[in-house]
Image 1 (tube, rainbow, N blue to C red):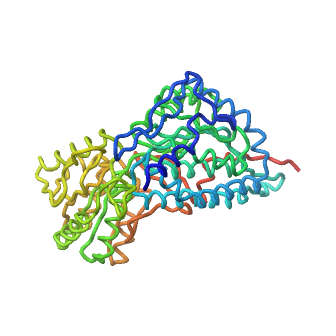
Image 2: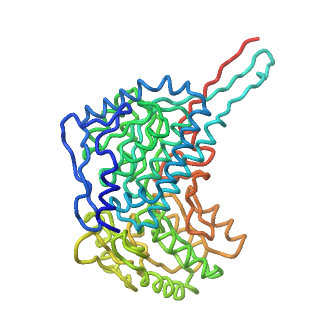
Image 3: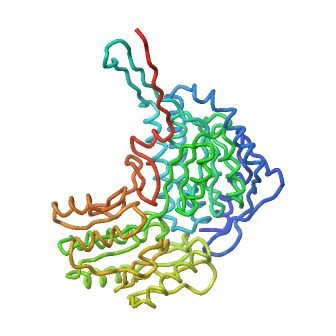
Length: 487
């Protein structure tokens, strides 16, 4: 990949705030850097919004809400459809842009663009399927008319690990439902969202419907908007700790919330599992996005009769993964997002080994530029190790043996989180028993990837509230109104 090609895709993206359909500088004139995590080098500077800029963005969203709510559902759907087509047409350059700012291998970045685009296609079709109801009152003297209306201006906050898809997963249903938005992407990866703003404008989205604010002070900019009272919903994807703080803030004005928070996904392998499928699923569930995913397999519980084979084969696969900058050919393991991420993974692995876990491969960071950590497999990991209770967010697979089905389920559920669980077994009755017993919003049954725009994504317990995607995704952006009709 030539330097000129890389600089070209970065140069093509707006670096200012996108408010009211216009690109505007931050009022303070301040900017902050976007850094390539594979090299540590600055890619560019983007506008650093202040609280005043955030209020201006909310002003624009509020001003556009009434007219946008009146737009025909078909028109809203056609905007999303055109944006889907533009994303697919520009998959190559958008994928490169994502790799430069986030680090994931180019093939994965291009895959995310397709995944992100699919949310627009899905919700383009859902826009014309917003329904209601009509019924006769039980006493026969009146009628019930049920309608759905957009909830109103929304605040959207997205993370750095899936910088395009986490945006379209929120923006798609908001537009389909008739809601305007202020969206704040993560400071580490703002370029993908800025590119998306340009694409939606090109697709015909009216001015003020989507407003993008980039900032190095997320809390300082977003809290005043949450407490303002004019926004009626917050959708957040990020850590459980931040989610708790946002829920407290939302309580002030009773904002509707949907939150996709942290995960601690168990990956259960029973002795009757198809071992080829289990290893393939483990690689998908662990190494997608370099392990930097809330759906990543965080704990591997393997029945004792097959734990040696599983550990050996998983180690062989992990050892064979090429590491490097995501733009390089055949690279699978790119850099982590920053030094803080590397430090956390290092601490968790050390804690596990100090408690008796054995390193089968990897187990260390990489000297030199960038934020790299080796693909790692640990075995004999005790349940009290920190990485069985905390999100690793890196390429580390900790393996713990179990003996009985009951033990496996108990260990899997021994966490405050409940986003996704993975189960590999050839026994249909066991598959159903375990899937029903696991405390998670999603189950990967004999497969290592659960994400799909047509399916409801979300967790229980400390992993969040509400669902994104599927037929229920648009409901998060709609209010139900009941009209009592007298006859």
